[in-house]
Amino acid sequence: MQDHTPDPAPFLVRIAAMIYESLLVTAVVFIAALPFLYLAGSAEAGWRHLVFQLYLLGILFTYFSVFWLRSGQTLSMKTWRIRLVNRSGGPITFRQAVLRFFLALLGLLLAGAGFWWALFDRDRQFLHDRIAGTRLVRVPRKAGP
Image 1 (cartoon, rainbow, N blue to C red):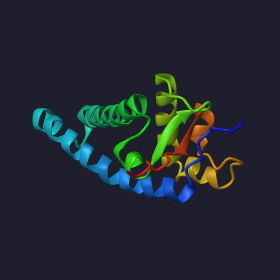
Image 2 (cartoon, one colour):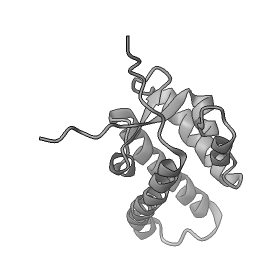
Image 3 (cartoon, rainbow, N blue to C red):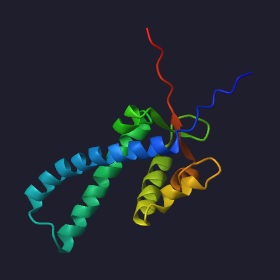
Image 4 (cartoon, helix red, strand yellow):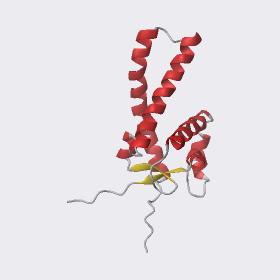
């Protein structure tokens, strides 16, 4: 009997996808910021600054969670043939999406510690994937005609 567990996505492929994702997310944040700043005016200090940061955090969470929950892939993950799945290889839950997003954000704020974790993890998983019960797997190439 064959094991149908997808192969984990290689570390360097995940890093390349993250670099590409950062370009896409920059565009999303830039476009999302325009209506807020038009309506609220300057958000350089005070309560507007805090609201603006929370607004952008909500935009980023929405961007990632919608893709992860819908297909398990953001645009860059599709390009690099990576899918986010739960431990058994199925779709993730909303709870897992929330946990993964905020743990990944915390890992970024701590000098990327959650990402460097993968270099030492026995399964080469990021720390936020290990804790959230998710993993990034390689999507096989489609067979040609």
